[in-house]
Amino acid sequence: MNQVWGSMEQYNTVVWHWPIAVYLFLAGLSAGAIISAIIIKWMKGNDVSPWDGIIKAGAILAPVTIGVGLCLLIFDLTRPFDFWKLLVHYNFGSVMTIGVLALFAYFPVVILFLLGVFKKELIDEGPFKFLAPFANIALNYAKAIEAITLILAIGVGAYTGFLLSAMNSYPLLNTPILPALFLASGVSAGISANLVVGLLFFTKSTKDSNVGYLHGLDIKVIFVELFFLFILFVGMYYQGGETAHVAQSALSGSGLSTLLWLGVVGLGLILPIGLNFALPHGVKHSHGFVIFNALIVLVGVLALRYYMLYAGQTFVG
Image 1 (tube, helix red, strand yellow):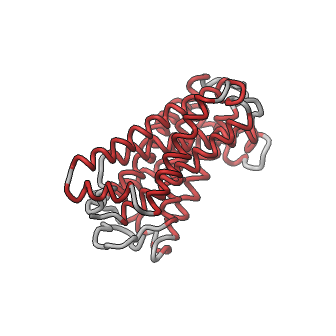
Image 2 (spheres, helix red, strand yellow):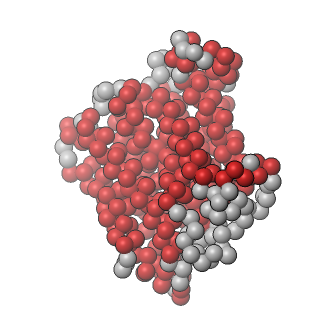
Image 3 (cartoon, helix red, strand yellow):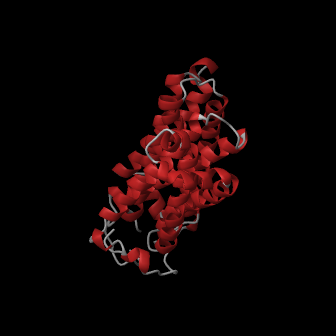
């Protein structure tokens, strides 16, 4: 990212590199982690104690991953120490401005959610007693804070797609399908990350109803991802002209197309679906398999972000 504000269309080379792909992945994962944690919490009720392992995983992952992603975003700037200008100079015609404002609101509320979930560990029995008023706010106004967090998380998850789709001269990116695709894949990544962290650190049993529910939900979301990816390329093909040519080039004849078919479609979408239907119930709900399945989904989502970022800037007609 070679400038603080403004359009990237004046450049005709690849200007957004791998740190941006990782940022897009982590931002989507953060949103998906908190969305799935809130879904689980609302299913079980706000009076659940002790807190569910999946909820704990989401509470940790959401602020950590968005924090790391924002650091990557800042240091990819040509002048990273000018980042403060983003916070005082707003251009409401810019997608990036709207995204920064959404992140500005999102980060504090996921921290509040974290404090509410880990009040006992961090405050009652930990060294952060000075944060008790904030944890009490998180618990006393849990429903309202969670509703706001859910709305902001959906916005952040979709924003990663809007950021790229605003690049009008890049046909592969300039599509209304991209925000929906990135939101769905972010939710899938968040569910998978919650399963990995939850099973490794907070709950050892895959017989937990929430683990089974999220594992099944992830498969459904993967079908949605596959549908959006299909619609994206079919839509480009039927537009004809240069857009159709870009779609054909992006799907075949390059290392990036190999990444798409093997990494995104094969590893990240088809393999989890195939294993879910092919394996017996006892195997696909085992501790090791659930973690393995979640990890390959995460690799597939990262591959999707990398592919869309680089292919979108490479194949321009």
